Image (tube, rainbow, N blue to C red; front, side, top):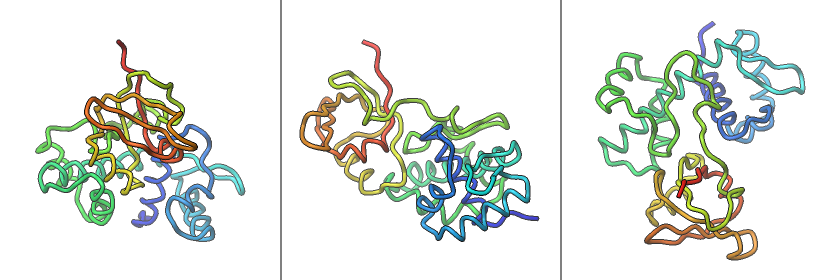
Length: 222
């Protein structure tokens, strides 16, 4: 049975959820992230399990089989290569590319992506800092360095590694303040209730602690 575009979306979403949190992924999380009904997700996951792409027990977590993991890595790679090309070649902003790439990724051939990837110089990361999976041994956790900004220590130099592509308003705001992956920042969690202030050499930005969960950083050695 051939995978539909919606089945591919399920696998890619499972991959991305596993990148951000190593805890078991539930159908409820898939429902929330995909923005579809619980019954639709239940049916989709059941079909993927029957086709051998995921493991799923009733009311239990959803996890990849080896076959499902490799397919998910391919889908995520296509998406992130397209996002990178849209920014680099067509001057899209990083808050625009997730939706645009999602509308393209199911219609392109492997040859097209291979050539596009080569034209880009085989980038390691997409514009959001997400590592582009390569090879059959790629796993979600192997592509997710860093700690959540919301859990990071105060007044310590950190590098922005990744920002979730699920929050375009946050992406737009951070870009306006020059805070993109690679930027060195410090954090202050005492700037106000439920807020965290992040500072670079030139700018400051205040975001909610909830949004800070969507940013991964790494500690910079002095």
